[in-house]
Image 1: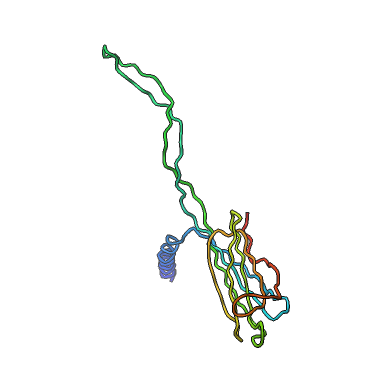
Image 2: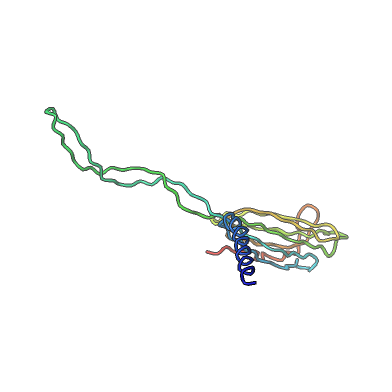
Length: 188
């Protein structure tokens, strides 16, 4: 009985190693973070937005030229055939790399419209994405229907993401703004 149990333990351990080794070999060096945001409402509480942000940190090699000063021995022969050498400092350029990281984000949101009839019947959400260099761009979504709609957009290397929930017509947000609410802040 002891002999059979030892064989079964050995076979089980070998099977776990055979299954676990390829999984560990294929693992990549990324880290993912996900954070929920909201719900945020328009000024009249007839539009609501909530969702989550997922951020993946992916490494890449950044190549650049590096200049180094190196001691080089320079030799020459004179007219008699004698060799004369001296040590000279010389600049040498070589291509080197270092690891850097990109942070790819995806913002998922759900926009609900609690008054879809009459004037100003659309719910709007406007996202403001601020990059690390201070530049910003905007992304807007609308929902003019009865049921909640799901939206998503993605990019890379954002320092801050804000949302403004408001009401409006089919063409633009016109009023009842919530103000800029936090969605995501990158770690420094």
